[in-house]
Image (tube, rainbow, N blue to C red; front, top):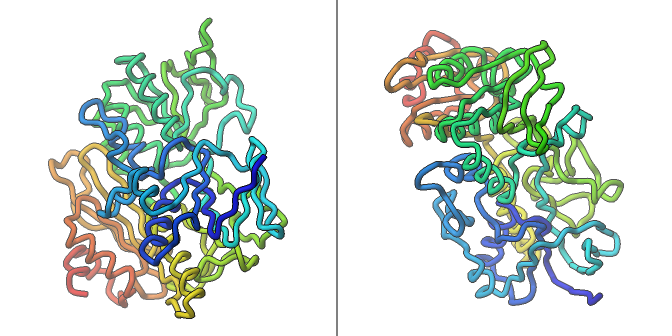
Length: 433
């Protein structure tokens, strides 16, 4: 098979790839120098839409509406944009071998791609129940959500199982967002997760109590402290029941599993330095191999604010790390210095009429403030995290753009919090900083 050569190759076609391409175009790239290789069949798009507006029963988001970079208020990069810029989109192409010393990638179809600089933007893959040998987990209508194909299959099932029963396995990001999306589609929804409360990696019990109460008021049944251990299916092979570890059995027409992801780094094992489950990089996202950069979910990078290595799985970091890597690559070529990556961790979610944002680090003591009554017509509440006498993290539900900026500033500046009572005043504290 013919060999193709490029100066720059971005491996992966998700959010990071699109933002990296835009930065290359901004910095100056010649036609034919840059290629994006993606196993997906479409140009890079804003992945968060898949668990939100893509599943709406009315006014649903569809491509080309949410190609990058609309998620951050930027220009929408349609396939034609890449053509105009001379960037080659190599889609529906799975890379099965990476030989970093030889600067070579090989596809499942046997094509060879050579590069001078590689940006690894492979992202994460979902953890599947079949990985753990859960009985019956290969039944039809058990879904995972990562790519647009997954979302399309789920949309079809929602239409086919109108007013049916849905079981969400997992109480994290995907579980909460899909629980809401399926309820909006008039399905009878149950959520099952083993932890004592939802989103335990971020939420305190006080924060979680609000969302669990709000979801219960919407008619979503929440089952905590147990896991799915098996599935039964009907004569068509479609899922019929979810068997729980505590002996309960739930009827199900649709099951959606959101139990986490793992970074896609297997291609590079033994060829680059790894740390904390990801590929170790410097503050410019360069790996231990000088011609290879890693961005987004796969990168374990120095988080300057806390002076420690972190791996962050979030769209905001995917966008910003991609831009930083390209700035660094082009800066080296031009002999220009680039500032180190100085990232403030940021997470957000939207479901039903709710919208929260979190900035900083969720470590230390916590102070809850505001109206967190799930019955309130317009709830607004938040939390601060305090470590070593400083406010290091801040969460806000129902905030305005200005209020969200205020809590971001608090998390970035880490003001002293000698008096915890001052923090119970909530936004009044943030707005003074």
